[in-house]
Length: 282
Image 1 (cartoon, rainbow, N blue to C red):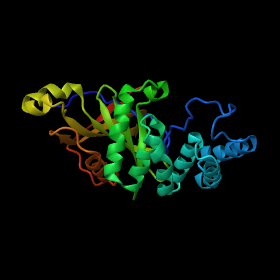
Image 2 (image 1 turned 90 degrees about the vertical axis):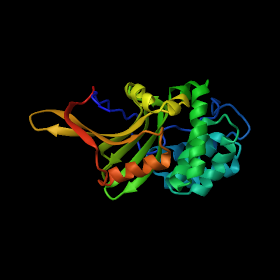
Image 3 (image 1 turned 180 degrees about the vertical axis):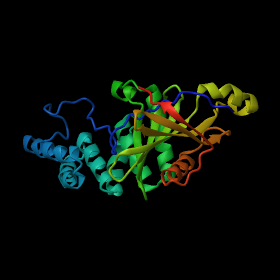
Image 4 (image 1 turned 135 degrees about the vertical axis):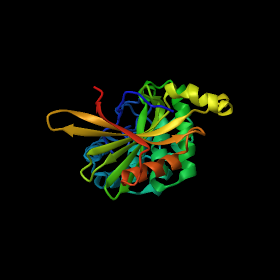
C-alpha cells in the first residue's frame, strides 16, 4: 500500500501527569455542602494545591490524605489525593479513593484517574476496561469540559534513554485518525521522537477490498508511524516520517501497541520505510 502524504504532528499534552484536575460537580467551595471543608481546612488545601501544582506530590499527599479522612464525602479532595498518590506510587490508596467515585457511572474524572492508576500498576484487564468505558462516556457526554477533551497521558514508562508517555485518544484526532501516541522523552524531559497509531481514512478503501468481513464488522486498517524533527544548519527544521508496522486485522490492543512503542523508544524498533526532508506542519 503506497503511502504518499503530508505529515501531521499532533501532541496535545505538554506535561507528564494527568492534566485534568478534580472538580466537585461545579459546587463553589464557599457553599456549604456535606463534606465541605472549614475555612482552616480550605487554607490547608490551598497550600497542598500549591505543592501539587509544583509537582511536589510527596509534600501535598499527607495533607490531602488527612483532609480526605476528615471529609470522605468530598470528591474534590478525594481526587486530588488520589492523583498525588498515583504520582508517588501509592496505587492502593489511589484505587481505594477512585473506585467508589468511578462506580457511579458519571464521574469521568475519577474514571480517567483510575485508568491512569491501573496503567501505571500494570493491571492490563482493569486498564483496558476503564479506557473502553471512558471512551464510550466521552462519546455521549453532556459535560462541556469532558466534551472538549480529546487526549490524555494514560501511562509513563521509564526507558534506558529517558521515558515514554503513552497518550490515549478519547476520539481520533487529526486527519489521520490518531488513536494512541507515544511521546519519547530524553532524561531532561524533552521530546525527541513521536510515535503514532493511525487509521487514515485514505487507506481504508483499499484495505476493505482485501478484508471485507473485517470492514463490515466495523474494523479498520491501522499503522504505527514515527516522527522526528531534524534541525538544519542553514534552514528551517525539517521532519522525518517513519513507518514501523501495519495492522491488517484491525486495531491492535493497548498491550501490543505499548510493547511496540517501548521497543522504538529504546532504539530497537526497525522502520519499514522512512521519508526525510518533510516540512513541519505549522
